[in-house]
Image 1 (tube, rainbow, N blue to C red):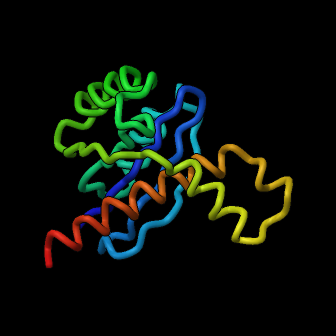
Image 2 (image 1 turned 120 degrees about the horizontal axis):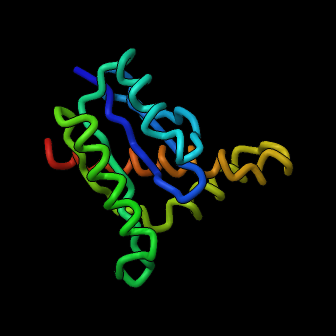
Image 3 (image 1 turned 90 degrees about the horizontal axis):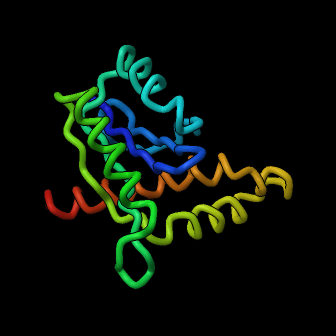
Amino acid sequence: MGRVLAIDYGVRRTGLAATDPLQIIPGGLTTVETPKLLNFLKEYLSKEQVERFVVGLPKQTNGRDSENLPRVQAFVEQLQKVFPSVPVEMWDERYTSVLAQQTILQSGIGKMARRNKALVDEVSATIILQGWMERRRIIKN
């Protein structure tokens, strides 16, 4: 069984999260500058078995497509070309940034660390992955 890798794609930075190899626990992986993302993923997949990508689907709070959607769709197309054997699934990412900021605030870390936007992106990716995993558990039961 391979890991599931969640991607919170952004214009400047992209947050990443991954499951453990048994797909039981999601955890933050890192944040990567978006122009370096594909190279990072190539290196990561050369060392780790990844069974699936879960990419955040940018929607507005009213359910309409976000202005970032065309960039995410273009990235997904690239992802499928570079890693044709790894399925890609989209997951609604509405409210993940707000939830990430709340989670960071509740964690008790210092004020300067809370301003770290890279940390927000990584936690957002973790929330995307956690939501995807919860839905999968419901479907299995």
